[in-house]
Length: 228
Image 1 (cartoon, rainbow, N blue to C red):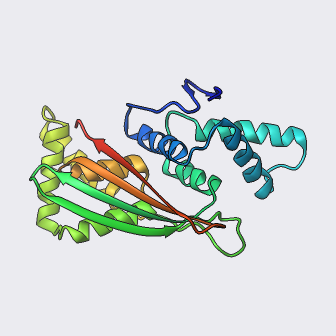
Image 2: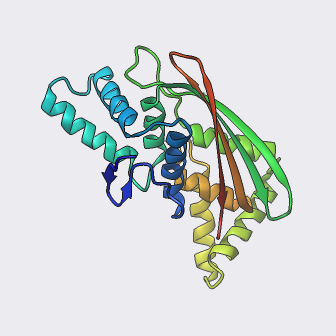
């Protein structure tokens, strides 16, 4: 496979380690490899996405937009927003995300969420907002986390993340944590923080993608372990 450099990662190279912001970039790389998208197909998809969205029309603008999109999709770190753009790039219509939590109390739970992957510029449709926040709230509901349990998990998280902190530090962290993970819109990094808050030490992601034109369904999996 030919090389296509973006920052310090080569096209076709798996991302084997990193923080929470590298999980999605690694998963997107895995999806490309699962779909057997080589450098040639990747370039064709870049041009199709840019022209199809009307992002650029002349040769110079197309070249500039292609480089920018390539950097986003091939970056060693990726936000949820860019990951969704990657699914649009692959012409995905609907995504079914299934997440299995392996928690420190030796309990395992399975959670699923279905959402549409549609560009906001596509007629009257739009990408479903706040997917991660809705999924996290569903997880809390599935696990029957009441107020007392929530406070217990807060105490556990604070002692785990700041064992040497003062009582004031612990109180501030608990308040900040609650605001972050219960917002109506959360980032991927905060979503992962929420899973760690729930005493999760390992996660299995299963993503089923339904494509716009063909209706074909593909399945992709990834295991994630937390060291914190």
